Amino acid sequence: MSGKLTTHVLDTSIGEPAKELGIELYQYTPAYDYYEFITEAWTNEDGRLSAPLLEGDGLEKGIYELRFDVGSYFAAQGKDVGSPAFLTIVPVFFGVSDNSAHYHVPLLISPGGYSTYKGS
Image (cartoon, rainbow, N blue to C red; front, top):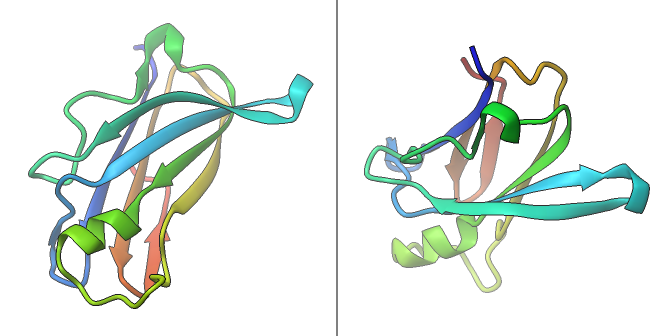
């Protein structure tokens, strides 16, 4: 089995998937103490991505960062979240120790907070 990285986003303020939410993926490069941009994607009608962010040989052991653009998502929903919004970009840092495993990083959001966990 080859490893993969997936995510999904649920908007707990409305109890529905977060549609068309932008996500960027970065990988930490220790030699340069730098997070390198890998890819970007947007959630679909189910709050998921149409394909894994990484899979197979593309998923390497190391430290990653997902950046969820919740500020733009809530603005597009017409929510009055203040100016500037309390949450703009939600960063989630996580490690991949087994590149043959499935890493699922869900995000639960509302205009005033968020939560994440190691999914399955």
